[in-house]
Each structure stands twice: as structure tokens, then as C-alpha cells.
Length: 332
Image (cartoon, rainbow, N blue to C red):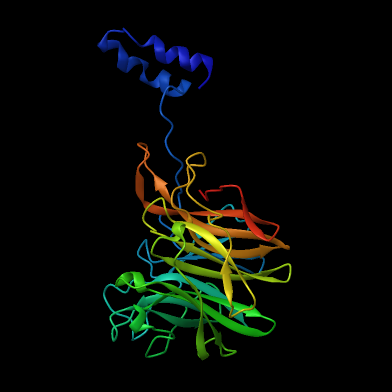
């Protein structure tokens, strides 16, 4: 607040009540108000994933705004426009009318695109993973399978699928949804068939929740190779409050073994940055520069958590092998 607005605010003290309304507009213009928290015109956009393709960018997100798979497009990572539902029709194995379509991620394989997603399986009554295909990154994506791609029903279900191409070999990472039923949560990696539509062999368990900052949940795996080393990023703790955050592990290869690094997350709630419960990260590159997409909760004027999760995109650097988020950029 500048000197003028500070003095203007205090000048209202002692004025007759009938005069106060007349000062309102002037005080608002001078800055004599509590600033409103930042907001995003994109609305609720949780569990984001960004695909760079064809000179533009496609952002996918969990169901909201009357779409199973939300989809945005941008040419500059700043201005985004909404596109139609990327997967308007659901597979036969998905429960209706509340399918809970979560955490979509897309990879281009040859001339087509494969979208991995989470939805509620009719048969097991658990959240499980499916794969849908399209000739365009904008969809529509179609899953013609009659059962999920991966469904660890005995572990509570399977969510948060993330594909990874390494030297011509394709892998899928996912989380067992044990927190749904009082069980531990694990992150797994498993080889995929070259077309991405079937898993190969058995899954390898890479991580289990156990560090203090993780609470009872680890999820949202993202595997990358940087400087010749495999790094597994992941999110942990309660997605609905300020404990949600992102950490990382060092891995010997695409299917481990993996070891968490440090006792603190690299991305977490920050009062100074007005960032609350950031996580469910995804990494992509533009011209050799890493970027990280993630969500964080909106904040109300009273500082309490809102009901929507907003999209953030920042540059991602690496310092001695540690991921460093360079900024806190809300996509408005």
C-alpha cells in the first residue's frame, strides 16, 4: 500500500457513518482494501499433464467442468483455450453414472496417441487404469477394452498411470490405491507392449510410503532421465490439505531399485508464495528446457482452502541432481 492509500484508509476513522459509503470507490481505487487471492479463469484443473506436440501444447486433467478428460491447448504456455472432452465415451468396464475419471497422461507412439487414465471398475468396485487411443492429441480417445489395463484389486486398486519411453522400451508407472482401505501405498513400474496397450511381465515395486512428510500416501509417479540418471518424482500425503507435496527418488534403472532422496519434498506449501497443497506433477521439455506442471488449491480471501485446484507451470532446474522449481506461476 502506498503512502496516499495508507493515509486515506486512516482518514476514515471518526467519519460519520453516513459519509463512509461515499468513500468506498475512492478507497478501492487507492488500494485501501484487502487484496483478493489470485484466481484462474481455467477453473478446476486437477492432476494436470502437458504434452508438447505439433508446435503447441495440450494440457489434460481429471474430470471436472462436465468433461471426463479436460483438455486445453496453447501455443505459448501462457494463454490457453478449452477444447471438447478428450474422451467423451467411456469403456464398457467403467462404472456409470459416477465414473471418477482421474489423472490422464498421453504419449505419442508412432502415428497415434495413447491416453492412460484412472476410472472406477464395475467388476472390482475399485479405481483401476485403462488405455485409450486416438489419431489426434485432441481426441476423441477410445478405450475398446472390456477390462482395465491394470487393476490391483487386492491392494486397493490402481491409479495414476504414467508412461515412460526409455531407449525404445516402454514402461508404465502407477500407484496401488491402498489408502482407500487402510493399506500401505506403493509405486510400481512395469514394461508395456510396444503399442502401449498391454503390460508385459510382472510389476516391480519401486517405493512404499514411510517417510514422515509422506504421511499415509505416495502417488503420481513421474520417471525421467537427467544427466544419465533415473529420477522418479512423486507426490505424497493428503491431497486435500497443505501437507500435499512432491518429492523424488534416485533409481538404478527404469524398474528400480529406487531410493528416496532427502527428508523433505522439493515442492510444498508456501505461505510466502501463496501456494497450498501443490503436487501431482508432470514434466515436459521445450527446446531442452524442463518444465513442471502441477496443481495447487485456490485460496479464499480469508486464507482458507477453496474447492478448486488450479494449474501451475514453471521451469524446472536441476542442482546436484535435485529438482528445483523455478517460480510459482499460476496459469490464469
